Length: 188
Image (cartoon, rainbow, N blue to C red; front, side, top):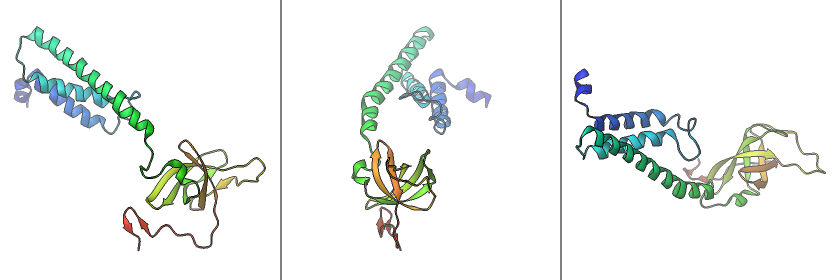
């Protein structure tokens, strides 16, 4: 094992640290990320610096400066790509490319997490394109005695949408079935 570490160059060491660090950080990157730059980008940059520096053989002082410059340049490129490519697309993205959020008004669904009058819950909407989970609140009118609670498993209908939150009311129907087809195929 010690022979492996002794034969390792700085470039291969950076590549190894980059690969291992990126693999370890994938499950926890949402916890330790800052806006559009997460910790995995650091390790990806280290990997690419090691990969590129394997092509160069220079003296120690020049190699250190080259590695620092490469690391900064690659990190800057990753930040710019995320900032100008991924962030604008994420801002325009919706849960389904075929339906706008406003198309969910009037759709039927079922409560999966209980909704109280002062808290949010979760519902699953049954659309022609499949089942869509959404965050939900109770739809209340000022002159109406709206329910204070909609329990898990109850049927609902979407009345309004504001951002990522759907406003729902209980829906009563004698026979409530999800659509016969979903994105998984026919339900038997």
